Structures are given as C-alpha cells and as structure tokens.
Length: 384
Image (tube, rainbow, N blue to C red; front, side, top):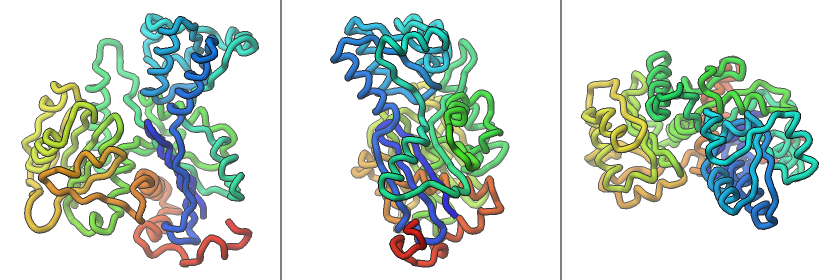
C-alpha cells in the first residue's frame, strides 16, 4: 500500500511517499521550494523583464508570493487576476482591487495569456510531483490515498477578525472531535468556510485516489507524537514553531487539553517560555494572545502539566524550532523516524488512518515501528 503525503509550508513543501512494505526510514521523500516560493520567483523574473502578469488558478498560500506581487506593482507593472486567483490575496475582491490588482473574467484571461506573462496559483500541483518522482524512477501508481496539508485562515465574514474566525474554527473542531485528526477531512467533506482546503481539492487534477486535506500545524504536532520519546508520555505539550505561525497543544489521555496560536514573528524565546508555562498550568487566557495580535488560546483541561523536573514535559518541532534552543524549559526536539522536516507528513499519515479505518491498522503498525518487512527499497519487486 502506498500513500502520497504533501505538507505545504511557507518555505518548503515536504513530500513523503509511504510504502507499507518498507520501514518508514527508507521511504522516498522530497523537500523542495513551496508553491508560494515558486510563484515568487516567477513574479520576480517578470519584474526584471518589465512584463505585465496574469494570475490564474485557485486560492493558495501567500507570504513570499504576495510580497513579490506588491513589488511588481510598485515597480509600475500591471497585475491581472481571475477571481479565484485574486482571493489568494483577500477574500474581499474590492480590497484586492484596492491593492492595484485588476480583476478579469476567465474569458478575458484566455485572451491575456497570449500577450503577457502567465503565472498559475495553486498549493497542490500533483502533476509536478508525479513528474519529479517519475524522473527518479518512482511511479505514483496504485495509490491508496493522497494527503495534503495547508494552513487555512478560513473565509471570515466582512468585519469579522480573521484571527478570531480561525480560532473559533479550531475551538469548534476540538469540541466536536477532541483529537488532532479532527482537522483533517475527506475531499468531499471539507467545510465551506475553509476555502484554501477546498482549493486544494479543486486543483487535484489527474488524481485517481482518495484525497485527504488537513491543517498544517495539527499535522505537525500529530506527527511529532510518533517520536518515541514523545510517544511514551501520557501527557505532553508539543509546540510547532512555523515560519509564520506558532501553535502549541497540551495533550493528555482525554485528548487536547489546551491550545494557543500566535504569529512567530511576534514572539521570542522569552515570550514563548511564558506562554508555554501558562498553557501548561492552565492560566493562559485567550486575550493574552489575541490582544498581542495572535490568534488566541483555549484551555479545556483543569489539571496542570509540569514542565520542570527530571523528565521533559514538552517537545518542539517546526522549521523555526531553533528559536527554542535557549529556552529555560529545555524542550525536547522531536524528530520522528529521524527526520523533523517530514513530521507533518507523518501526521498526515496518522490522520488518514483515522479517516479510512480500513487501511488504518496497516498505517499505525508502520507508525508504531512494527510495519514494513525491513526490506530495502532496491529489493522490492519492480524497484517500487
């Protein structure tokens, strides 16, 4: 059984091909530039050439691509975008127009593609991944499932804080299903408010396998729990320090006991230590985060979790986890199956096991270190 997992971040997209016949450490993987970084590069080339740009496609992640678009406009060059692509910048198209981006219809876009530079926006480009794997002799055939993670603020109503809207969504999912895989969905069951997740579904062209989509931070935290040092603890705090967002969960036997989410650029190690201690002892308030321009905090369990003593009480993962090297909390740096960069992919695997129980036992056997035959990849039939 093979499952393709793709964890889409701001800096990289991390790709892992699970094969139940081999140990996870032997699985094929790619860590390559994220879609928003690829779009950024394409826009920068257009700026250097002094060309107008047409953006088509679907809602995708921002950051680098947004900044490159703004720089292109400031340089005096036109940017056109179809409505779906334009919503990558803001769900309110009037605000997109105020940025200087010209909204065009699909028919108008067809005409423009013949005249100006064309950039397609999408978070999940299955054909690109398929071609890359194929170039290394790894066919993506007979997949049991594909799982993709992206960060989704959700489509907040006009006048409603997108930070509060996302945190209301986190709260609702936890109260409905108190487990990290509650943030994963089958492709036909994605909430309408999660427009970026739905865009991943709509862009999954050429895919002939069930598709699971999930939020990135819960995927990373779930993946980190399969590090043997983390997995052996009944209660633990796990923080994912991402490029843009830091999210920490307090986990126990009953599930999620608490959570906070902040913008990574607004915290340093000292602030992180204070927030983590408050999350652990249950004193952290939503206002402590939200009024500091973060998303918020929620506490569900009353029993405090000690972060000091002889045994660690917290683990950290994520591309900016080095921030916590000088932490007074002395966190454990989780690296499930020896690879921190693929942590989110392991979380996607676990979520897929929950969503599709008919294949779940085989996946969990692998994640618990009892799956796979120990056969190296080169001894498998047909090499894959």
